[in-house]
Length: 99
Image 1 (tube, rainbow, N blue to C red):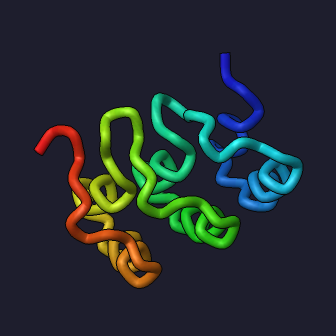
Image 2: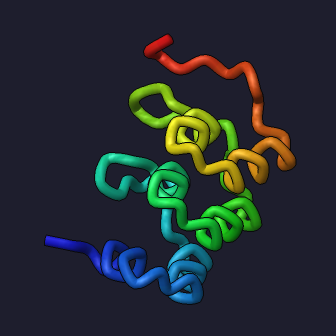
């Protein structure tokens, strides 16, 4: 089954996501095997990425595969998100567990 968060993300309802975060939703929770921040980058949800950055998410955090948000943005060719992460101070030479 799907959680309310899954449905909110599918509909890209940013205000509802913000309400959940403000009510204590753990940003480390996974969505389809990814931390929320990584998942938003994976699906190219720019507004969601911006929201999480405003809420103080660690922009260099790694998922269980050792990938940082920057790794995912570059791999998915999301130039806008890549630039956003770099402008916010993402570590450019961070290593993942595959390389």
